[in-house]
Structure formats: C-alpha cells, structure tokens
Length: 279
Image 1 (cartoon, rainbow, N blue to C red):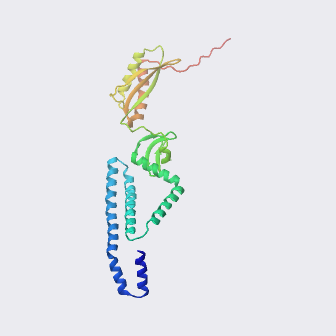
Image 2: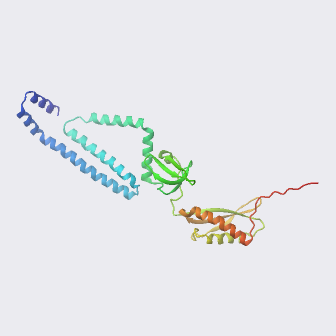
C-alpha cells in the first residue's frame, strides 16, 4: 500500500495520466476484494443480529432491549470485517486495535459507575429475576415494578410513591419476588381465651376461610395451635391464595374470622387494667 502511494504521488508530479490510469486498474482487483469483504461483513452482521434477537426471544428477554443488543452485535461484527479489509489493503491495523483498546480502557475508567449500572441492567433483562408488574422486596425498598431500564428500575410503593433504584444496587441485594409463583401462602395469627374450646375455634377459622372467595380450596387451609401466650392461646391459619389476590385475601380473612368468632361467642382476649382503690 505504501508503494502504491509512492508510485501514485510520483505519477501525479509527472502528470503521467496514462500511468495513473494503469496503476489504478492494476489495483482494481484489490479494491474489489476490499469492497467484497465489507459487503460480506454487512450481510453477516445483519444475519447474526437477527439470530441474536431470535435467541433473546426464546430466552424470554424483555423486548425493550432486543434492538439495543442487536445494534451492539452488528457493530462489533462490522468492525471486525472493516479491520480485515484494511489489512487486505496493506494497512497496519495494529495501531487501530491499540487505539480502540486504549479508548476502551479510558472510557471504562471514566465511566466505571455507569458501566456497572449498564452491566447490571443487562443482567436483570436477560435473567429476568422479576418482570414489570411483579411486587419485589430488595431490602431497602419494596414495591411493584413499573419499568426496567438499562441503568435503573422504577418501583411504585404501596403508598404510591415512585422510587428509582440503580440496577447495580438491585443485583447486589437479595431479591424477594412475591409474584414469581402463581400461588402464595398466607400465615395468619388469631388469639382465643384459655377458656375457649380449641376445636370450636379451629372450625370457626375454617368456616371463615371457606367463605372467602380468594382463599383456595387446594391446598386445604390448616389451622393449628401456634403458641401458649401469657393471656391467650394463639392459633395460626395457613391458607393459600393466588399471588395477585394476596392483600384482598388477607383483609377478607381478618374480617371474616372476627365476624365468625362473634357469631359463635368465641372470646378474643385483650389487655385489661384493673384499678383497686384502698380506703
């Protein structure tokens, strides 16, 4: 390539147009090969990009990131073929590779935090430990997932506050996904007096569960004695509901059990203060 440049410069100085034409024609096969390599690279990059998108779809990755990953993959493949074309022309590509590597290191050091967020976002979108609409707890905050972005995730808390959480914080925390499974168990605690019949109280809780539309019949509700307290017997009710019905089932059971206890005259003990006056 350097010889080509030298010869061309000399021919231009000498105004040898016939020599210039002959020189260019002699290099046409090389130029055609370079154009062919670049064209082939574009075709292969598009093909690989489509295959990557299909793979992401099969894996269930969020569609919002498909185009982004496809663009990165296509760019990387095209760069490889462009470097190959430059090498075919006789250009030393080591300097290009060194420049790209140096630029990557500099950018990585300067944008270390952003790169960490980006990597965490990819991890969440590819592994999908949760999806939009799931209720999650990451220790410091809990709420319903509204959006999953590359750099952050948006949660809506139970009191309707919008919380923007950096993705690196999420991937570094223990994630509790309350909607990952279709069904969820409710653990409810009810207190009765020591003077009450345990079997009668148990039947009252079971009746209350059967009257709650959100409570599943299978697995069957289980009611057992959980604790002997200072002034009461504590019953635990293990009942199942659909994950999306959790709070409706919880509130309904609290109300139904109280009404059932009242209708059957079952006493719910509470703290009392007796005051004695000495004359």
